Length: 135
Image 1 (tube, rainbow, N blue to C red):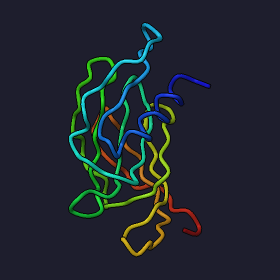
Image 2 (cartoon, rainbow, N blue to C red; image 1 turned 60 degrees about the vertical axis):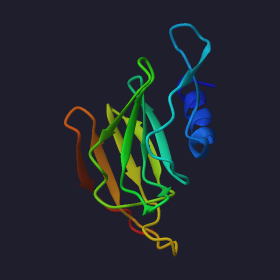
Image 3 (tube, rainbow, N blue to C red; image 1 turned 120 degrees about the vertical axis):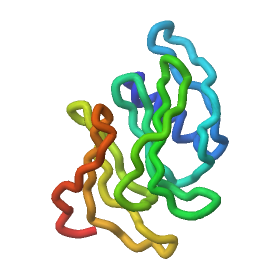
């Protein structure tokens, strides 16, 4: 299993607790990270260039479009530009230095979404991409 996949699995399991360990690539040992700034459930996460991005999900106040970035080298959380719309249960992946958020649900009533969004961490900006044919 790749280290980035293992990091993602552990972080996903710890999201509800808001804290958890990550595998330090430089040493191969686990290290504790600070709690995420926003408690949430049903969020999505993906590793990209030594950082882990958490997008959307349910917060105590509702469905979030919030995006937070954890720098696994420094243990620092940074709030990034929000997604174009609040979503939960999305698919997210990193390809070519960018994140892609695909599908998910837009309401607490499980309304499916066929949208695809691209996030550029260098520009800290979102671009809407071609929608899926069905949600």
